[in-house]
Length: 240
Image (tube, rainbow, N blue to C red; front, side, top):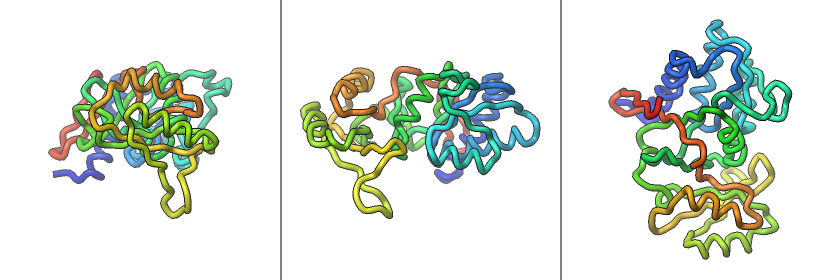
């Protein structure tokens, strides 16, 4: 039986190979690369395929400082989504997730990179989620806290409005840092849990109407191809 870390490695490498085989990752493409421990295995596999000549002239948009640094270390060229090379759109984006529902709706942002992740995901023609089996759930909102990125000056007012929507709110604290987590964009994170499953498609829009909310971790508007690694060594694909 595979450990969770082994499942992450399996899905990171296996998904890239499958996407190359299907022609969804190809030389000359514009590719979004995600953030987190699972996504790092995909980044590494892309680097290997560039190094051995399978992929050429890949133009990458990164979702975080973590990913940009990894790409730099692997020799993968990274561009701003605003650059002429990318011109505001991508052929495909691939990323991990914190929870995946049967509908394809996901929660992301455990690594506090949700804003950049959503910019990349929602400007990609195709979107791919890679995950281990522990992240597959029946509903969203009650187990893994939904991250909401907020402007610090609106913290109290935003939390009151989130609580009015039924959420139990916690300001995310840093690890090996005193005080709250600060995102790559200089904002703070409020983690939200509900007593019962919520409608993520409705709630994604509802949360973003709150003044002071920058973005939230429900991803519902670009339905992904999903790869799931299982402990028995099976790599499952949904929608490929």
